Length: 307
Image (cartoon, rainbow, N blue to C red; front, top):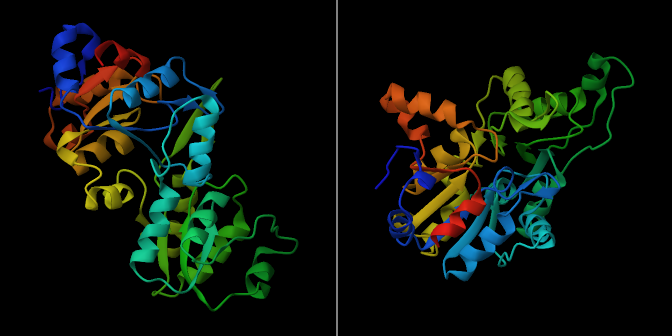
């Protein structure tokens, strides 16, 4: 009905929006920027999420956050008051684990990133390890020459890493010198604004460092890659034709919706400004239109009016 128009749903008659929403059996929400900001839920998001749940629809959280495991993201959500069902949280760390499992991967994984990736690998009996507090005490050359190397490493996974440093770059690149070693990334989220003109570096910064040194291109398994929802789609739990994606970023959430055949709503509580979307829409360039959502709401809470 609103395909790639970024229609502000609050300007339309309620019945028209309600009729559109009635066509969705499943709603997928991004986490950061839609449901919460770091350690605080966004006003009204708990009521909206639980209202969707109470309406009889399937509702999932699909996040690129790999610092936490999918289960710990669910626990975080439940602590805020979101009624999240078991197995209804999917994240990039889980997507990495499922990908390796599908390949019958038997080797070890060197992880540059949060503990969430290692926990997801452990669930699938895949050995992941990292060096959290490693520091260069000599020269970079001496470190690279003297460091021990595990010959059984068959994959390197890079995600957002709060303790990212040169040691991790050197170690990851050493393993990736072998062409048969898999190079996987959690997502390409570049930065997370935290106010006062300050940002946190996202996984894209860590991945770019390793990519630059190795000249290898990683397989990114978080959004917008459809792999993150491969299992529920394959099993029939999610039907793309009756699924709505609600997100706050164009390059991950909205593109992800487009790749999967979902319809989409952009909310204004996250990183993307409405004016930016309007400019892309009004240019009308075919390749960029996949970044334009179908609808727009100032925040998730506004959806309650149409349930």
